[in-house]
Image 1 (cartoon, rainbow, N blue to C red):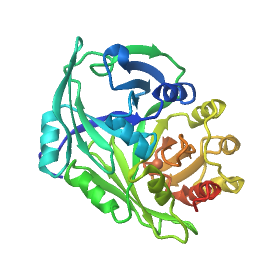
Image 2 (cartoon, rainbow, N blue to C red):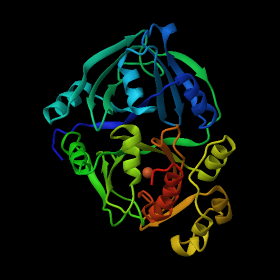
Image 3 (cartoon, rainbow, N blue to C red):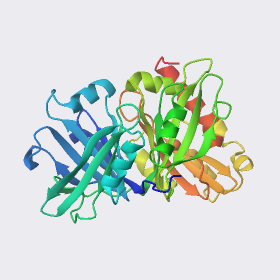
Amino acid sequence: MPEDNISIKGIHHIELLVGNAKQAAYYYRKAFGFSQIAYSGLETGNRNSTSYVLSQGSIRLILTTPLNSRNWISKHIKKHSDGVYDIAFHVDDVDYCFEKAIERGAQAVLKPHILKDSNGFAKRAAIHTYGNTIHSFISTNNYSGDFLPHFEKKIYKEDSIGLRFIDHVVGNVEVGKMSQWADFYSNVLGFTNIIHFTDKDISTKYSALMSKVMENDNGRIKFPINEPAQGVKKSQIEEFLDYYGGPGVQHIALLTDDIINTISRFREQGVEFLHVPDTYYENLESRVGPIKEDVSIIKELGILVDRDEEGYLLQLFTKPIQDRPTLFYEIIQRRGSKGFGQGNFQALFESIEREQALRGNL
Ligand code: FE2
């Protein structure tokens, strides 16, 4: 790691570009338990787009939609449909981060600039990453408002379902590009490669993928990067690339401390999850060892369990949350394990493939 490392405190927010932000915001509130905290649109002087800011635990999402067909957001949506545009980093020194990133080969999106309102000012710059995805650098050291300048407070309080923070964000890139993007995160942003899954680790009868997990220096940001690998049939990563129109964010993992409560609430609120076959739960505890949770409830809710040397984790994956089979969410609870559920890959991918076959894409 270079000495003059870019220091990132964490993820400030994730911005999604969507076809109808008003309805998407309602879905995230009523199905995911996010509260709305801020708004930007015509009423606040924003002539081009409307944004809703949603919050739960320390997770903040911005849902943005264009107000006409001429602006760049419309092009983004035409190509990708709903998806993640910006994984924004919270930093202290935007100028330094931007300058160093550019010096080390990053492509600029936005030069450092000041955003100001009556609560003070924030600073923002942005660089490109894979596909049409970007990373903003944001500093709010001189800002006392609830979110960022140019957003108005507009609150719809919802009942939290226990989501606390963003555990990891996974990017899908083209064949042969995984290592290139892993190098980007290590050379430009000073991340470390903590895990490398080869196609031998992650493959089923049909489809395979490879993955490198990149982590920032304080461990708060984890970015696995996947590329498709050769299988008998089409890899799930290839299906994503086809429907997203290129590389992009495949899933966002949200952490909870009580997955039983969180998944119960999700299911009550109509969110669909990948189906886990009953056979997965036969001899579960002999495979993963004893767990604190009641196995019959885990089975009823379709939650997956995996163990490594440090402990275990519980996880579950939503179906894609828009009509294109692209972005989905993972819900994860960690009981010591810092892994990603490698032991579940087989069961999980068979489930993903069943859905892929139903879509006629396998
Ligand atoms: Fe994940």
